[in-house]
Length: 404
Image 1 (cartoon, rainbow, N blue to C red):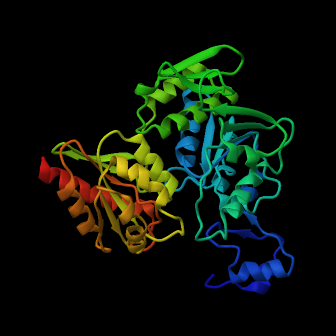
Image 2: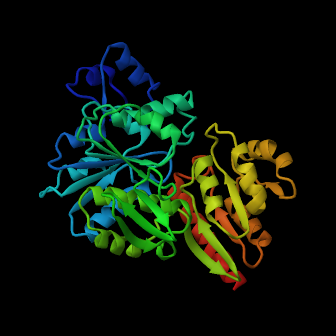
C-alpha cells in the first residue's frame, strides 16, 4: 500500500501486525496512544482452527523441534499440519493452515516472541518451551522484556493444558510460573523429575511409570548434542498427542537435518564444512560448539544484536583452532575476546564473505570442521540467514573440491 495510513488503520475493526514491525514504530505508537490494540497473524489464524494445537517457543531449537513433532506424528499415523514462524520455505504461515479443507488431528505452530507479544485468546493444548537464552536485544530493552513476551504462551492456560519443559531449567520454570496445567519434562538424568531422557545411550520416555525405549542416541541423523534435547522434547510432545512409541522411534530414525542448522554441506581433504547460519545468537553458537568433537575454524559475525560475546570464550578456547571475526560486528567481537582466548588466534576480517571463507579454508587442517555459526543476524551483508547459509555452502563446496 506504500505507507501506513493511520486514519485508515485506526478505523479498522481489527488490526493484524507483522512481527517484523517493532512496537516502537511510529504507526504502532500512534495506535497505542489512541488505545487501539492489535493482534499477530497466528492469533488471527487459530480463531479458525478446527482441532487441537501444539505451540512451540523458546530461544533456540524451535524450528527443529516443531518440524520434528510434525514428522513424528505423521510417522505414527496421525495427521499433522505444521506452520508458523518456521520460515525458510520449510512450512507455511499459521493462517495458511486455517484454509485447509480437512482439519488435521493436530496443528503444530512455531511461535516467536514477536508473535506471542500480540496474542489475546491464543491457547495451546500442548505448549512446548525448548530453552531460554538472551536474544533480540537489538529490539528489546532488556532480557526481561524478551522473556515476558515468551511468557504470554501461558496467559490462557487452564487445567487441561499440558506443558513440555526442559528439566531443571529455573528460567523456564519461572517463565511458566504458577500457570495451571500438567507439566512434563525432557532432558536431565534418569530417576529425576523428567519424562524424556537418555538412559544407557538410548532415548527413553517414561509417562506412566513404565519406561519406553525409542532409539539409541547414536542412531539420530541430527548432528549435535543439543539435537538430542530437541528429539526428546519432540518425542515427549508426540507421545502426549497420542503417537505410539514405535511410530516415534520410526520417525526419529528417518529425521533429516534442517537447512542452516548444523547442516553438513561439504567434505573434502579431511575437512568437514558445516552450515549453522541459523545460529543468530550467542547461545546457539555456544550450543553448536559444545555439540562438536573436532577442532573448529569458526566464522563469527554479521549485524550486531547487542549481546556480549564473552560467554563464547571458554568454548572457543577449548574447541577452536581459529576464530574469524567478520562483518559489521567484527571489530566488537575482536575487542571483547582477543585478549581472553589464550593461544586460540582471532583474526579480524572485513565484509568480503568469499575472502572470509577462503581464509578459513587455508587455516583448516585434516580432521577439522569449518563452522559458520555466526552468533549474529545476517542483515549487514545478506538478506537473511538463508542467503548467508546458501552462499557459505557454495563457497564450501568449491573449497572442498579444491582440497580433495
